[in-house]
Length: 356
Image (cartoon, rainbow, N blue to C red; front, side, top):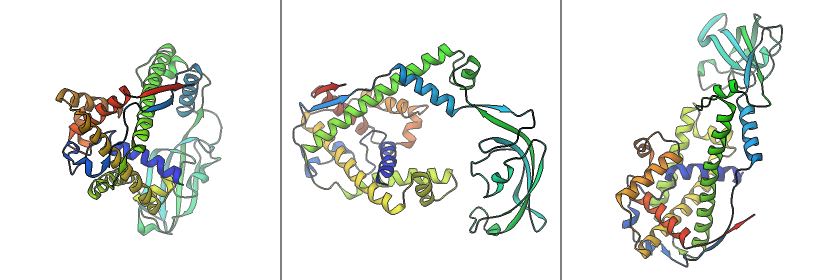
């Protein structure tokens, strides 16, 4: 279970900081870092890195994944029956004691059988149905039913008409027509293959840089002595993770606890424990990098701050720097640029060995 929690935190700590060192409560450049860290050796760090290379096999695997992830959907024109995984176009009306209830009616609704979007028994009841067929499904709402407590445990009947059925068709190779449906600005197979190669090269470069940074930070931190970072700083990092997870839960119409259990395979108690441990380590990392900046007299210009923000906006999929700023954990943009500059300093002064 710890592996799943670590995966969450890898995502959300990065999102909380957006690969930066910002702080809501204090500007790192003004912090008395010597209270929290005694620097060890950070120049000449020896690290071995296995670089990610974009091979023909990797490109083929990516394209095969896309073909599987985004299949064509073929409309049934014969007497084929609906199966799990198919998309059915349905009209439905639910009745409780013979009276239609609120939220129980829909027309021309697309439903993928097996998705779990409807209550238990609804999707299963449509397996084997044909186009034009109407069925009465006698079902029971779960108890409790948070979406409408009045229906908790209630026996109901859904009258469902199947208007159409689409079946999944996974292509074995790219076609020009298929490429056009992917909405990535490509019209031919050749254009898409070039797009994939550029995409993977960019991802490989980011992965290689991230792996190098991680190795350097781990080595540098191992040479330092730390005291516990300020509690308010740890709380701020932890709260950032919880806010973002809570936002994701709200978008999915569930509680944070439900999201953790069913979305990430963990529980609140284990998550909180691991999140605080990782937030503490991230604070130590941020303080160490600032201490190195202080030791080396590293400063950043406004131009470097702007470049750092632009880099983060692009690498995190934001449409603009302004959109990024709206999500940043700190208005102290200098801290983000400083983090980049110190990491560049560590790289320039490291002994890096590439391994096969």
